[in-house]
Image 1: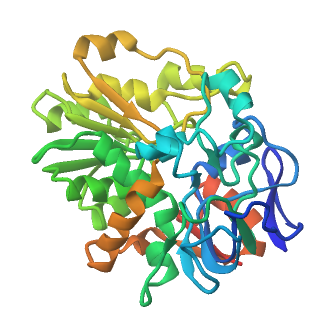
Image 2: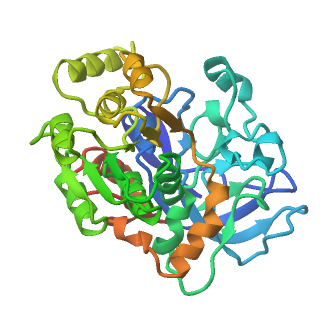
Length: 389
């Protein structure tokens, strides 16, 4: 089959690789009809995620048609149309039974590798390094899906791929980010990063009762989308000081709920931004935590900072004194996707949201290598890429 593969930092190529096969009786094979490039894929592309090997198949936002099932699979049949969560979860371990699917303790065969860095291993992920399982990803013609009775959700007729594809990751991620922010009716919510996850965090903040949503980003197209589709007020850090502007907008108190939808490759300003860029380039720091610093400074006393943005490892100059003295709660984590797919699918079916609004580019799989660069460099108004194998 044809698949997008990681070759080395800054290089993705389309290659012919072996077709996936049933390995465990709980597996299924799906033929991919749509898949997407995620912002967190760029951390692989830019070389910041450890554990990548030449030839690894990328991608963790897939959907398609079931073409084969293992002997123990009972909930899927050949011909079913499904969306597959990016988290691989067994459904029966201590953490899965608690609904903490991204903390599954069985799905990462390389758990010891992850535990050496993190203390404990999270769940295995599709197409996201050998440290997180070494699973082939979904930017391909076919995908092997472990624990097929646990992850995939069946899609009813009448919905396009683009309406449901993002149940695989970014819609649940944005929703969990808003949920983790502990939004109460009427709250002012500030969202750093108006990329795809930020867009869904904005939408979800309104669903959870926010009284005001403010989006912060450098990219004009993203800010326009946040205003048009998200009904958000916007701040461009290139034109305005974020702290001063938020203070003016909130009578000096700051937003009570803050969401970092940027993650490890944040673009900072001033000496702090230069410091992070130099240290990350020299591999003396794995993340650029500018947004976390700024959000902690801006957040209202007693407020909450929710962090769906992906961080890889270690960061410098985190203002723990600010967090402690202001009484700020921080909540984060990889998304427990399986917890959210059914209720969010129902919101789509009911017409509360049409997630397809984030799609700016639809391309073939063969165009994938060029689209990685276009997406990374924010060219051609690119916000979200869907690939059609």
